[in-house]
Length: 273
Ligand code: KMH
Ligand code: ZN
Image 1 (cartoon, rainbow, N blue to C red):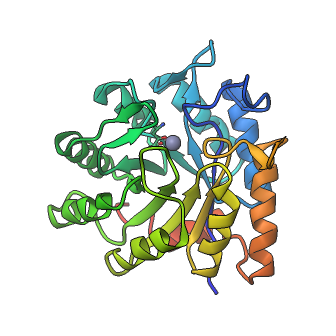
Image 2 (tube, rainbow, N blue to C red):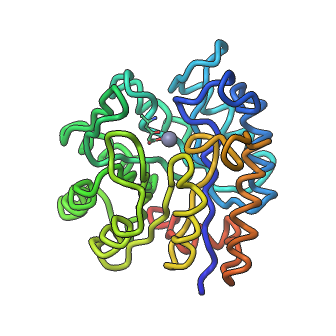
């Protein structure tokens, strides 16, 4: 069994401190949470940032401060969000890559997102993919619904992203695809050869789908962006607590947590260097 790449999605754009008092929102809190997750076994930190009021922002300066702050303390892979929040413009969303992170997300289609719409039409997606390629940043393809896999393959065929493609299945967003085993099996079967994949189960699905991914030789994402509870009715104390739990389950299944350098190799993050 191969090592499991654990991603910690520690902030997100939707969760508030009122819902989860331990949500990191200042640059310093985000840096500290990232390092704690690294120490607990995460190889990738999926990064969103907040402004001084705690609202989501794609401000290039704040992303730079956070990415440089994390890099000064550990070698965990920095993966910035280009999704941002649903009300943001495309230009605003793309500012996060100016700090030249190790990876960035790329969502390959539009999806209802609760009462809102997460807009990613083909023009926007092609622009984002082209910019990431120009910058030599390997994307993680965010899949919120099944049709987005073929949209990613189309980008590969257009030369806008390169093999091997790394996918993250975000399962259980209201308006997106279901969080169940049958859907996960279908998704994995539909991937281009050589691809790697992880699962981000929303809410109560985080641990169950993460465990299923471990058994299927996939990778796992956890963290407050996706789930704020340790168990039903009990808030998690920290992002690192969620990382530590999936590390323990992984160890029982003979899937050691990949180090950042192992993950860099598995995902071929140096492919453009
Ligand atoms: N906040 C969501 C609208 C990403 O990071 O690329 C989009 C999102 C995906 O979180
Ligand atoms: Zn995100």
